[in-house]
Length: 425
Ligand code: HAM
Image (tube, rainbow, N blue to C red; front, side, top):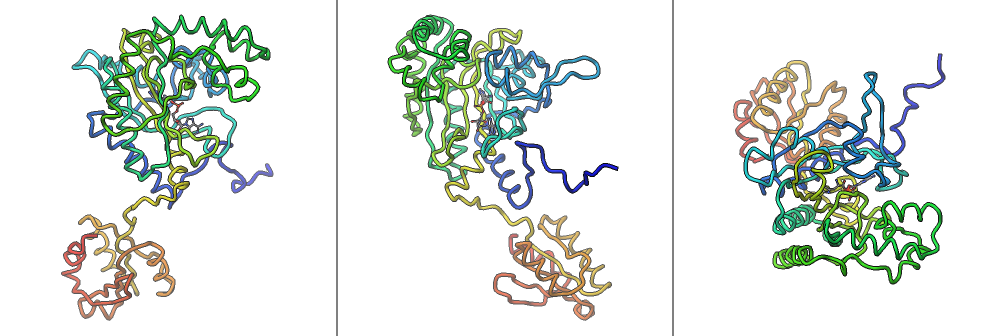
């Protein structure tokens, strides 16, 4: 016999359970984040939670923390090397390429998704090992209006939830013309600094990531580092300006952040991050950008694309930080309490009928006392309670109690469903 009892199990480190009542808010966040993208012609895509590990090492980048330190990898009994998806973009693009969606109609192919992602990170508030994203990707078009569309959709999503205490950081990472020139200049600059062994290695493999180093000792040395902005080619500059112009013309404010690099290697040109001011260290509530080279990196044709993913867990925390309560319909509108066997049969049938008529109705089960059952009615948040004893039924009525006023009126059994439907529950 092991000493471990079932009740001693807890959710693995860095994960948590979603339970009522907060799970209802979580679902509503997912819904509302996706709504603007759906209205803009993005179709739903769902991909497996695991993929060939090479999809991510090639796509997201061998030198990123996500791939080198944070992937959950496994070898199947058949010998396949798989990884739990650390992000959605590579999978969605893989799925679109596999199904030839880019050959079936006008480009871009617009897709949105919602699901769980996995990164073996140091767990803390707002940073989990399983987290939830809603994402949108527009595949196969190079048009600054598309970048602007996506950024506006993300901003609309956050606003629709009632959030306001956040900023949009914006940068351009250049393209395959200008970025290598910048990269060389940055490598030369970094070579002259006093950096530790690890950082020096990073500077050689992925010098842009060094700009993102949070340590003060490194940041102090980076003063005077060449900035990508000054190296952008004419096309990238014009593209970036057009994106900015469209954002401004459509009421979306942004902050220039020339050091915004992001933790994934596939980005080109437009990159952005939404940062909430009430969340402390884990402040990014969403991010994305253009990834014109990713398709070729994973074996597809040239398909310039752009997209984002918004973090549902952190959006939840942002709502809490701003004290926003989503106005959610009560899960239960009507709560039925039957007193006695016969009453139970009749009320049970009425509950079934009400539900079929679209009224959210619950019923007290295993009633031992009316007092307890009425407490349950109260806790359910229902606007009305239906109470019926054998005497009511003999008269062909049930008692309808308005839970906010306490007022109780008899309603004929036959008229019950219409009466409640008229109250627009
Ligand atoms: P990302 O910046 O890695 O981008 O993640 C997007 C959002 O997911 C973050 O802003 C954050 O809100 C949330 N998130 C990331 N990691 C965690 C975590 N460990 N715990 C809680 N929330 C987290 C991407 O994943 C790209 N695929 C976005 C994209 C789409 N780029 C182009 N298209």
